[in-house]
Length: 324
Image (cartoon, rainbow, N blue to C red; front, side, top):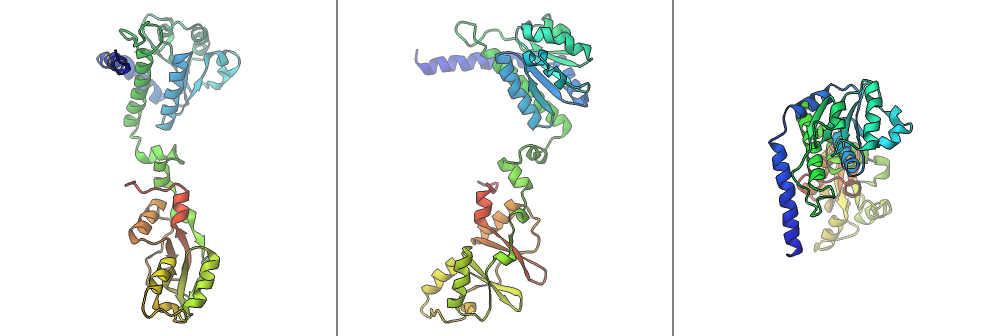
């Protein structure tokens, strides 16, 4: 057999385990969701070995989708970290056999604090299940491991049921994209939904400004010093134009090009501006990309310059439009 044949066999065994579990999900799962929803504190996920690794991922998924959660190793709990579990918390305990010594030794102490327990094991008759307020069946017909030893199908199923818990809780709570972004401020979605243009506002004192009647030659000097690739053109304190590196290149191709001509001859007249810097940064980026310029000017209702947003600052911060 080819390696790909082994891969297909593994995937089929694990897929069968998921489909079989789909037919068994019922009251235990429903009660688990209800119990978690009623918690006033956190959901503490515990497990040993491979179950612990899976539990750590489940805790992370729950925490990022609206269910306050963290992972606690049973051995650490028995040596002082049990105090991390508060009276308003609940426990999601994972053990395929339901007999892991580190876990079963901890369970009586958890129950002494009247902490509700959701158990995940292969048997309703396991020690874990007996200590649990509700039980989720994670039994599989066979492991994908050819020796039937290494947790494979069972860990896949446990992980999938953890995802199922997170999804069910999200839907019942009405957890939306905006809520997800709050827990992922550094992610692309978080940046799209929460970073605002004002976070990238360049103060007007840092923006080169010249008078409408200044010569092109004299306007290039402040534009070069500021290194923004643009100079704002004003008439009696009001924004009337902008001159960019691109405008300079286009001007030099004109037959009537003259360095001594007024900047007004070559500038972009009445450039696109915004008055509200509290718009989302992604919306500012979209405007910049659509209008094909680098500097978005922020002005008052009287067209007095307030500041500007540069495309490079948005890109550097990882702001991306949704169509990318």
